[in-house]
Image: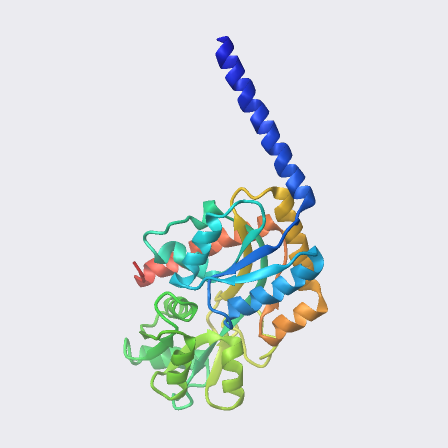
Length: 326
């Protein structure tokens, strides 16, 4: 080997050792400055509420400000791209949601790759949806709704928060498993979709439990089933989809923290530990449960496996339903 080549290799090795040592030192002193938690939706929405709850708890446990940075747009793709391009040092994090898993298939071209450009850190919480019909619809159970739809193939309309939204894909999964054909009516958000369903403009909606339970209790809608594998703590009398006859149905919205790929393992472990501590605390658990959400937690590898499974699962639903946003 030439002397110049040996010197080049030595410089590369020295540089690598120095970088590794620097990363380890930074990880040990983390955090040494404020952290930004980027949220891909506007203030006041579910992702923002979850993000601010965790940010406050992390501020208390880490001893540094955790600033919520709302960057709405493109179903959280703008925020995800920003975090994916940020320094992998643990000071820019993403409060992600099920939208990220959906977007991986919904969009034919993305400026980032969820599975390679972002590192899952921890699942924060899960939130089920409720399948609800307008009281004028003569059904009081999921089997009755299935029969109602089968007698009117392609004619029964349901409201969604938009193409590719959770309310859309949860219903498409239900329709596929129940072997029915129903017509999606997309709206610009959950609020107008639910409003039109309450007004009787469409037959049913599949939407967030926290939005639907008060309407159910007031008799303005009739909720037939909850999407999760277990009953909701704020609506324990409503059966699960599985109990209602759609065997194997289990779907929930979820929220979790992501970091840029390449973030030091020690930093990811620190954030993971602090979020786990937060979601186990009585104050955070009570906050999430009041929203109809179940506290999460668990390891970073477990969350990474879950994200991959969600990308695959919803990808199949999206392709089967022929949904595309680009």
